Image 1 (tube, rainbow, N blue to C red):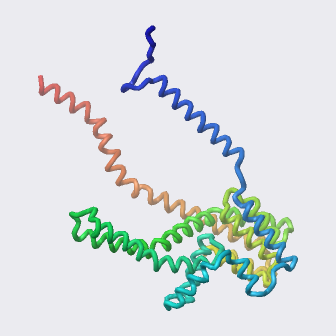
Image 2 (tube, one colour):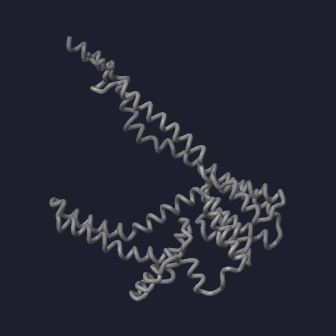
Image 3 (spheres, rainbow, N blue to C red):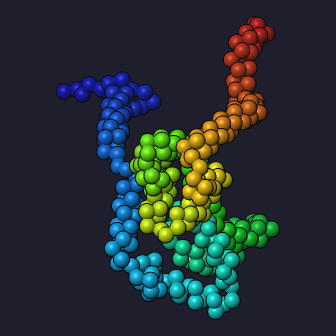
Length: 329
């Protein structure tokens, strides 16, 4: 009994390959529908933790003692050991710790004690990376033909170990700042609506955080934390200053200044926020126009390297073939 085979292309059964691709496409569609239906709020866990923290503060469960405060901030004594070691080596400065804590806040990390660990990594990683590179380049000699390149590679490994954590942290902070910048005009519009509806400032921040939590989770997280701080801090100005401290964005600092002035002088909040929202939208439109104006200059190199050669081949190819055939005859 002869087995019937289907059409083949390059030695592969077309029907079998088509069936496999159709199955993969169907699985991808089902997975996309499942992820769209079962989407979760990325802020739910964070807001729940912050609400629990506020309830603890309201009930007076947190004392003013330093030991209780340390138990809430630190989980282990790793940071204490690192701080003690760096202090004994006379390399730990308060300004350096504060700068690292500021970068951690910009990147969205709440635990300030991680700054000590990052400073310690900047001392340990260059030694580790430099040792590994020296063993590979000079001990094992994985590239025996390299002469000057060995020194350059070793220097690059040491530099990567020293600057690697800081560059990684700066990259996260930059992405987070861009995400907050995109959603800030919409957040201000919602704040204007909430203020005109008669909501208080902390209720307005909480409402905006819930509405924008899925579209802009970073901005929603900051607004939710600000709303919770406004509800239990003694000075409301401190909550706004914390918002400006956590976000590396001049627009947010302008919003914080406006909120503080309205709290102090009693000026209308809705009109001030409406003016700020219009300014931020104009700024966002100007950035989009700037990118559009730079597009022709950016597209010049791909146009010359990829599009024009193909266009010349399509246009001049038939003529060249005809001329070649004529000369061959």
